[in-house]
Image (cartoon, rainbow, N blue to C red):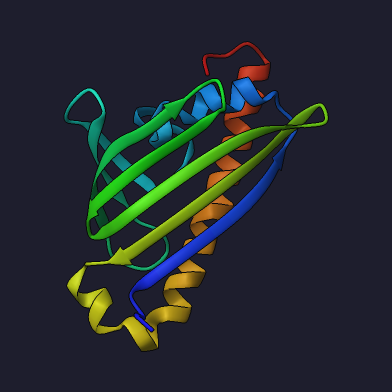
Length: 154
């Protein structure tokens, strides 16, 4: 087993229309406004950018991201990443009654040297750190969607 390889999957149920959720998620340049652990997004091309993350543990992860799928009809967003994390992330937005079922999937290998060195003993902490980041992301997204429901800019 490669202790530096991670697969994450989270499902969020949201009381917002799927198209509204998709419109928020398709703007990664605005993620730092509602997701505190995404510290910086810098666009470097039409479909590329550099992102910097930091959760509870005292280290930053920096990745170069490239959009590989932006499908508004099926409401799927997928990004390939390189840098401290190498792999992919996918959002799938589907209708769920009057609201939305949002599926987050991530398959990455950690390339950051210190995290690779601590891969085995640090794995429970790294996994918990990711869970906290996702919980905070959900909370921030709910606030952003509530603002959109009040007519504020998505």
